[in-house]
Amino acid sequence: MQLWVGLGNPEPGMARQRHNIGFMAIDVIAQRHGFSPWRQRFKGVVAEGSIAGEKILALKPLTYMNGSGESVQAAAAFYKLPPEAITAFHDELDLVPGKVRVKRGGGAAGHNGLRSMDRMLGTPEYWRVRLGIGHPGIKERVMGHVLGDFAKVDKDWLVPLLDAVAEAAPLLAAGKPEDFMTKVALLTQEDA
Image (cartoon, rainbow, N blue to C red):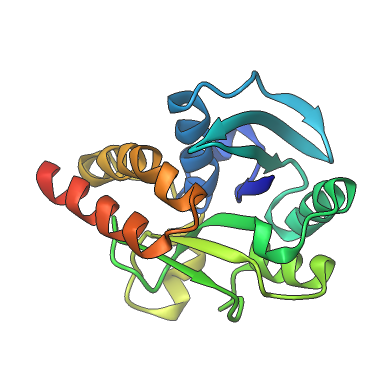
């Protein structure tokens, strides 16, 4: 079993914020692959499904970004999952909008959701799907950028990106992160 976690904030008014792209990605994946309805569990909401023959538990923590690790740790402990069976989908300032990178481990780079996961899991050795939202250019504008809603013009790259992530998800489930990144890049280029 794999645990796929979308990072975001649960308030309805925050749903369109750049910081919630992890929630958006996990929603599209669950919908595309016919996951069960969402239900409350592990201080979050979960949906279950199968992708590429792998059982996937999708999780959206309802603990707010800064407490994401509480929800992730509860689910991981219940299913006795090692860190390498966990994948976090999150916003990434250091990637241009629409770019995706997958890596295992690493620092939190100021991301409070990842910092919370590192603290609660006791290790940063889980997988991360870094979804580029771009950097506003100066440090003083980062908070407003991250917590700001996607602009209408962003839909031109956001919708194709989320679709591509869901379409390429079987490669990620099969443990082929390089192929996943390549497929997402190809699918999003076709829409460009």
